[in-house]
Structures are given as C-alpha cells and as structure tokens.
Length: 208
Image (cartoon, rainbow, N blue to C red; front, top):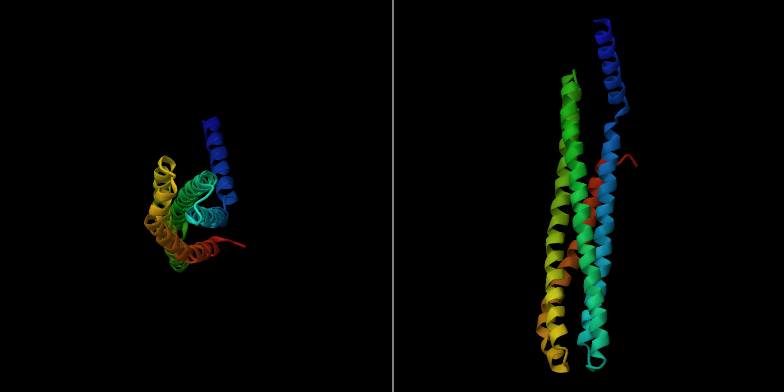
C-alpha cells in the first residue's frame, strides 16, 4: 500500500513539474516562427515567379533566334517556381498544424482558472489571436491557390513548346502568354497584403 501511495505521489509530482515547466507563450512562439517561415516561402515564391515570367517574355521576344537555349531557361525557371510553390504549401501546412495545437491547448487550459474575470480575459485574447490567424490563413490560402494555377499553366505551356519550338509556334503562343501575364499580375497584387496579414498574426503570438 505504501509503495503504491509513494508511486502515486511521485507521478503527481512529475505531472506538476511538467505543467509548471510548460509555457503557453513558448507554443505561441512556435506558431509565430511557423508563420515567419510562411512569409519566407511567399517571398521565395514571388522571386521565382518573377524569374519564370521574365524567362517566358525572353522566349517570346523578337528576333526568334536561339530558341532552344531560351526554352531551356524557361524550363528551368518553371521547375524553380513549381518547387517554390510546393515549399509554400508545406509551410502553410506546418503553420496550420502548429496553430491548431496551440489554440487547442490554450482553450483546454482555460478550464483551470478559478477567477471568472481572468478566464474571460484569456478567452478574449485567444479569440483575438485566432481571428488574426484565420485572416492570415485565408490570405495565404488564396495566394497558394492562384500560385498552383500559375504553375500548372506555365507547365502546360512548356509542354506545348517542348513539342513545337518553331518560330511560328512560339509567336502563336503570345495569346497564351497573356493569360500567364494576367495570373502573374494577380499574384503580384496578392503578395504584399498576404505578407502583411502573416506578419500581423505572427506579431499577435510572438513574445519578440
């Protein structure tokens, strides 16, 4: 009996120590770091997007000479922007996972409050942080959806030209390139607002 009681006391003490050593603000910091990684992924994608668009313009430029070399530059740029989009997608998933765990733990921990006013303050702050985070997720989600379309379109255009790289075929692709230009413009207009929303959410959770 004594052995069992001692074991229980040891376990209870270990749980108490673990609870005291766990800080919610540290988890919030993890979410903020994940959001900063998302910002970096957005900026990296934007740079690769511009490179791909410039390579497309270079391929279509007159005179239509040295087309194979121009095409290979475009092909490499398309690979680069496709990889950047995948990195952004991965950063979004990591950010969402970290935030889901943080807000779930935050809400669960509110059951331990005894003072109603302090509990209400915690609930209010959590709701504010969640709202800012949801806005950031919506912004980067819309950008990633547009990015996927941009990458898919360029990949298809590359496939078309890889099969027929004559000057006539390249010139006839100018109308298709205009669609890519429109998509590039939309992505350009989304970049800064998305970064701003992500920064606001990171600031709402960061101790820095």
